[in-house]
Length: 279
Ligand code: GLN
Image (cartoon, rainbow, N blue to C red; front, side, top):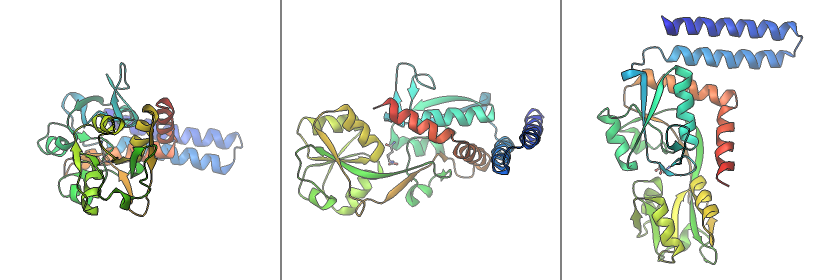
C-alpha cells in the first residue's frame, strides 16, 4: 500500500513537473528529459514491489580491498565502508526505502554467501563473466574496466607478452588471475591487492595484473610504479551487481535504480567524486 502510494505520488510529480516546465515555455527537450527521468523514478519505485528483505535491510556483500570501489575509511558512506560501489548500493537502498548493511568478506566467498542467503547481493567491482553467470545472476553493467599491468617505473615490460619469464603477481579469484592463466604464464597469487603492491614496491615481483581503476589508485599511492596497458591482450570487462539466481524482484529493483542513476547523472557524479577523492 505504502509503495503503491509512492508510485502514484511519483507519477503526479512527473505530471506536475512536465506541466510546469511546459507552462514556463521550456524547450520540449527539457520537458522530455524531465519526463524520462520521472518515468525512470516511477519504474524504480514499481520495481521494488515484491522484494522482501529481513528488517527492510539490504545486506550487501563486498570485499573492501578494492579502492576506489570499496575500502575501509574512518567514516564511509555506509558505516566504515566507502567507495564508488558503496555509494551506488546506498543510493539503490535509498531509492527503494531500504536500510543497507555491508558484509565484508573475501572476494572468493561472495558467490557462496549469495547462494546460501547470507547476503542479498554482492557489489565488489565484480566483472560479469559467463563462468560466474552459471552460479549467480548479474545486474545490468554499471562500469567498464580492463586489466592492466603495474610495473616498476624502470621496467622494460611494454606488453602482455613481455611478462613471459617474469615474476607475475595476481589477486586470487580476480579476473586478472584468469587472464594470466589463459596467457599460459606462471604466477603468484595474493589475497589482498595491497600486499601484492608491496611486493612490487619492494622489488620482489616484476608485474601485477589488476583492474584499471584500482591500478591507478595504487600507482597514485606508491612512488616508483607505472601502468602498462595492452588492449590487444586485455579485453574490456563490465562490472555488475550480483544477486542469487532467480531473485528477479531484487534484480529488477537494482536494474531500475541503476538505470535511473545513469539517466539522471548520479552515476557519473559518484564515479567522478571517488576518482577525485583518491587522487
Ligand atoms: N573485476 C575483478 C573481478 O571481478 C576484480 C574485482 C575485485 O577485486 N573486487 O574479478
